[in-house]
Length: 132
Image 1 (cartoon, rainbow, N blue to C red):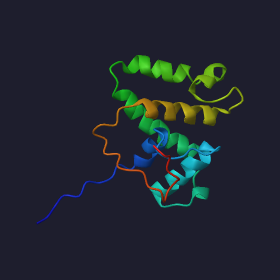
Image 2: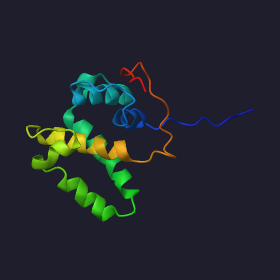
Image 3: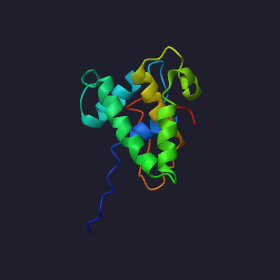
Image 4: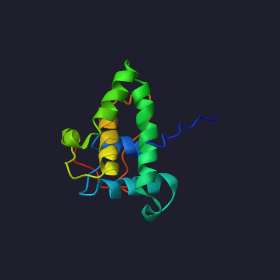
């Protein structure tokens, strides 16, 4: 009997990280480098902040497209990048642009519905799991 194997979503661990299944260290960028390194088969030293931003923007764009009012969601997303209100999404007023953008993308992914995305289960070999 041949069974069809369901492929894991390549973004599984990004979603799980955003939704709190992995422990978040003091350095979100390093955490995401580990996740993207695992995803791509590279060491975390080969992953840049720019790589992280490009992947997160791609995933976030897809999730914004899933909303009922894409235009309003996009306007809110961009408006929330303003450093003077960045603290609302877990940042602080001294964060650089990449950090603000990464945290904003994670905020969108944290709130999105993942039904039908086949995000799988967290893997303790990637990052420490939270005690949910």
